[in-house]
Length: 191
Image (cartoon, rainbow, N blue to C red; front, side, top):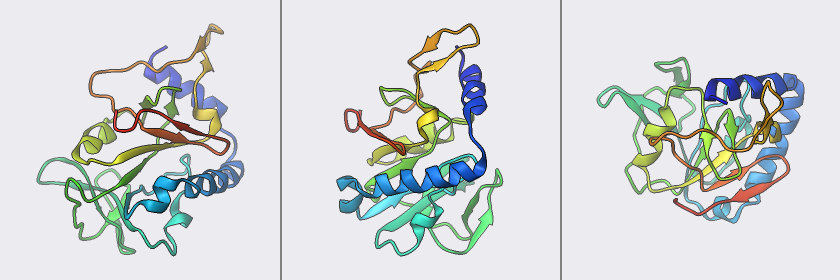
């Protein structure tokens, strides 16, 4: 199966948004039990789109320094910027800080990464722009994929064949761990 076909299969499995809201709360609760989360001083997060795990409530009352992706015009790519309550719609309509202060290489301990699909080895498919595949190598941080159970392979192809691994390309970044509402999968850290 191609990445586009897998995206379509996952989309067909997506429940309604009220269900996603309840499932999001369970994922965030499980994430907050992680020792890596509790020990991190600075965390890279994201501003959730409607079909992603809603981690926005997680921003309230945290003692961690939070960073979110912001487009850096000087390099033509995303970087992590300090989270501020003052946000604007960025280059692709995703909220980002009005005046981004970008993180340096070793400044972030843990980055939470959304995705459309993940497999049991830490591979990820995003929306197809390669934004996280360019952003993640800029930081020496643990990569924590976060998604709903229905976004984890295996999935069935249109032909009824079970697909267990995502197709990979040389630039695709692998996660160090994966958190869903029912499980935490740990892979080799900083693979």
